[in-house]
Amino acid sequence: MSLPESALPIWTLVYDETVAVHAYWKLFKQLFGGPPDQLDVLNRSAGFCFYVIRDALATDIQMSLSKLSDPAESCGRTNVTVGHLLDEIRNLRTSACVDGLQGLLQSFIDACKPIREARNKTIAHLDRTIALQKGRIEGVPGTTVAQVDAALRSLRDFMNAAAEYLGEVPTAYEHFMTRGEGGDDLISLLRMAERYQILQRDGKIPWDGVPSG
Image (cartoon, rainbow, N blue to C red; front, side, top):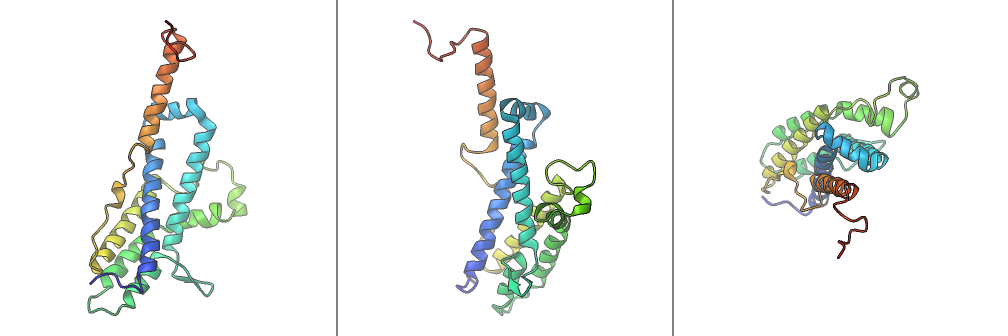
């Protein structure tokens, strides 16, 4: 069975969001999940700039996972969520059972629970009690790398099971690739720039970058 026209818009929206959140998470881990000396390179190069990038990526990733795991309907309005996608699939009324997809959806919702709590209390809203607590965690409070990994794994499981249910090819979301534009490439360029500065300092390269003679 191929994806019907009625479900295509919702599938495309959820699929694109799933690809994007995996890409952002991969970039986040490439930049900020490396060894201490890599973080030192970022701090020496443009510490505040990378702090802002880190905070923005962490916030966006958790907002995306929260939105995808929100209820299909809230306040009388329909949301584009994984749950809504399952409703669209269920409305196709095919002979195949969707119980397996329902279980995978619940696993995704459960995995995102701590992330949604952080969204509700510290990202989309600022809970007064939490905001006034001392020792607030830097970045996005209340969420760990392991929790995001678990949420993304559950999201992949659902999306690929849904794709197979609809006769589509599964996607290797976790292997999102950038050609010369990823975090690893930026780190390499920053390390090269530091080595270049050392050569300039030691007089092995002219400061204007043009060899004499």
